[in-house]
Length: 199
Image 1 (cartoon, rainbow, N blue to C red):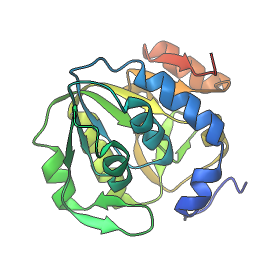
Image 2 (cartoon, one colour; image 1 turned 45 degrees about the vertical axis):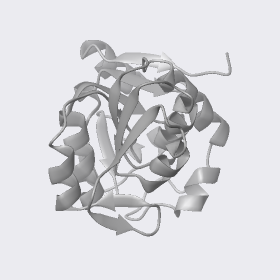
Image 3 (tube, rainbow, N blue to C red; image 1 turned 180 degrees about the vertical axis):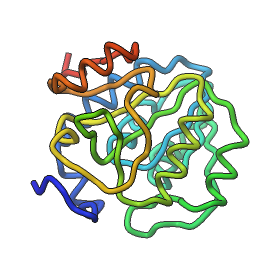
């Protein structure tokens, strides 16, 4: 797997990367969301696994800029789905742009489920598309609790656009070991690391 670059893998290729880890992370994150909660879910193949694990839950309000999340939850009538308006990115079903940012800012939700393309050694969260990053920042700022979902491969990658910093989160769900530098930052910032597993 290439560790750096200015462009992300294609959507289908990303879906095939670490599928078991992403499924485990999705299940672990979904267990933190109580029935009746409101949440924002952003773009990403791992965040889509959280949506999959939430199917069948009761009384949720899910706001998303991810068409795939809406499709995953469509038909589950006990979950209200609100889809952001904006520019549709055909490559992965993400809705981006200023209209999406303005739409997201109308809400104040219980939880944000956030993905990232890379995590730097200094705790910086990175992505490839500045338009997507603006929406991700809005999502994090509009939630009472932010949950990062990212597999351990994200520590081996880099990307050019800054989303924010791991210290801004409340919970980090991953399936593998966290590098010492990132682990220290989480401890110092009171970010809880949740280890996902088949158990």
